[in-house]
Image (cartoon, rainbow, N blue to C red; front, side, top):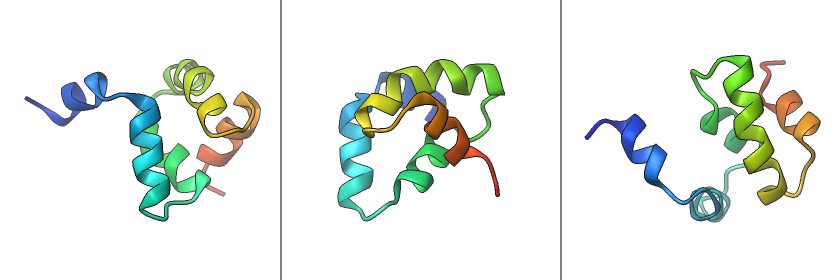
Length: 67
């Protein structure tokens, strides 16, 4: 099974909790979760992930950008 398929079936809340417990910052989590996604796919994903990170969708999209 490819990594993409594994991520598709992973519980998002559990993945975020695991990343936080590993010491990842919110910026690192946002970037890692949306790596390789188009802007429109990342925006759809952000609508699910942002509340789990206690940030807005706009903040999630800002954090995923390389600044």
